[in-house]
Length: 377
Image (tube, rainbow, N blue to C red; front, side, top):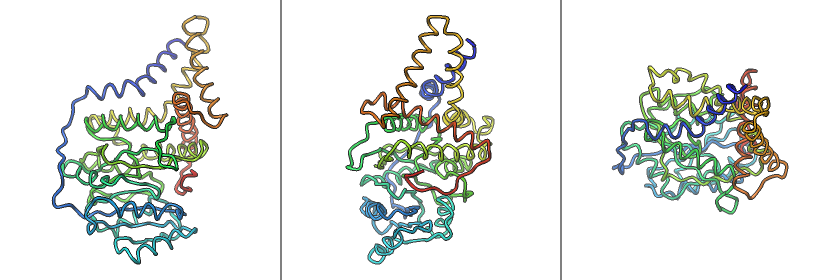
């Protein structure tokens, strides 16, 4: 049991601490980014299902970007919305020629909607936005300028969670995003980012490849760019403010959905795990995605094996630490949140790992998700 305990602990340490440290010492690839001149035409794709409460604000936000107005095209893909989303988009389009509506009938999900819109998009650079994503004024300009480096095929920005009043969220979810963004910055220096935020991404149009309706575009599309020999990078200057989910239950359901689709994405793109073909990127996707998503296994093994060796004072202490950690996470969950950042982080850490475990069971059962309700999961 002692060997199993230490193997599990070392694996956990590698996943969350060792891999980021390793990235600092791996060989770096230079980026040559400057202002693109002339500026390219862009198409902003906004998938939406029953987003009447937020869609107008999101469209206005994109129209007010510091980017040449005659080079912006906005396409809202309504996935058979029923709440008046379409009417709002049509009303805006009557006075703003840059805005168009595509209605997908019957409802087929976000990925199918993107495939449909790409057939009509006229931009050289395609930008993906969620229906509730609000960009900082220069976000699109920063994204587009990254394509001045010919090796860059896909760019993701920086997402910051905010409260409904626009103030920054200080909970575990926000702390976890800071950690993820730090990882993306390190991965960009080495080669390519493994995971992106679907609310503020951009791709060269010629690199877009249609996806299956059940595939997660935030995961699969960047990987398809890597298979075409181009880099996926993180642009910290391209800021997205997105309102956090209203409850831990909604966050949990969302994490289960994303994790399940990520498992299928890794299965579909399993060739990228071959180091003889993809070199360092194979290490990156194994460390950042595969091991991260199955981290619940060594976490469980560390806890269970530790329980069998508590006759030693040191191991009794490590077991107590684990009990306190998981107990504090449960306390936060039962009390519907906390103002303590560290307790919130413990709770969110457990939430995402339990979600990954549940999604893994669904994956083994062959379940797939294509449709869902935004911000509900």
